[in-house]
Image (cartoon, rainbow, N blue to C red; front, side, top):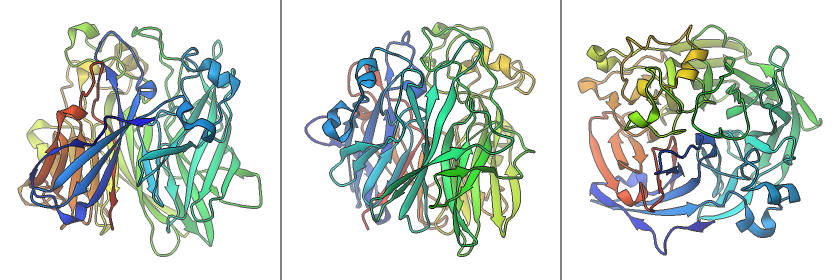
Length: 516
């Protein structure tokens, strides 16, 4: 794994970079080949990690360093031991894939970064200061029968951030009549103070024991009656095949079940943990839970904010669309670039206190004549501000011409009418943390359309900043209290397509690490 170029890439800065931004932004990037005939699932995309170091001022300075990831792990030498199966399979067996390919989530604690993939692969650990990879975190061993690893993209951290938790499992190859399923499901704990690590076998809860959709995107921690608990958002993606499709043709889609949330009480005295189902999540629209943020009160319990998409997150854009158009006829089409929704999703607020729970849901279709009301088409990021008064959410919107016909057919009974649906633009919206309704401010400053989806909130909802990033639009700094006000932006299109073979579409997430 190596940094791109001999020196960082300088971004062109306009405006004034606030002192609160001093530090760096970390982004997990992915690549798409410029040859549109080449098909690659998002889950299998090549990855880069981007670090943007920020110096406040007017205009200030932003410099970016790219780390190209070696998905085999060979560059780590004896810090990652590859089996004979992995050495033989890498690059030759499409069902194996890779050891690590962090194109999605970023987790930071104790000057360490853990970068993760959307679904496949093990986390890559890096040193924040040196920007060098340390190791690949793997607690299950691939075999020819179960060649891929799946890991939680977004870790759970204890209140003092001294402990991190995530799931990891193997994925068994499909058999005739049966899709891919999970095997050897583990819950992993990293003690960031002592350096100790622990892995428990995770037993599925009663009523949700199917192993085909047992994949988990995000995790969260809370305390109750003196015990530690960890919750896991089961996304529920069902894969027809471990290997990417041979071509970009249509195929039979197995309908995924609705997401659930597993939770376990941490017990250091046992080797197995029995998962239970978090109650109260049965009566709202949406299939795929993925991203979350959590508020932890001084005592027991938690307030969870999470998104839920009406989208099959295992299926990506390829083949004919819902209008019967071939991909070659669509200028905006890249095979495998994204998963499109088939209807609008929602954001949930789940409060648990004293073992009791309360659930609130915000969901809204798009009405062009009421744009200030926002929408909930394909929710992505969810983040609570420092004051715990507002929740900032990004929504990817909807591009009907990119919804594949074969995906739509699997959900036609609950999907939109292709003859009536229209394009829905991307959106970032500020919601009230208590009521989960749009937290409206004068001049429609609670909402901003066409911003990049990768976002992070620094400070509180009145005096802080909302920062967004994409390789095309660059780093943008908006006032969190009025998103009409742009205080600074920094851009360099070399980050979008710095070599001849690939371009870099919008990443879904970024985080800020303060210099303080």
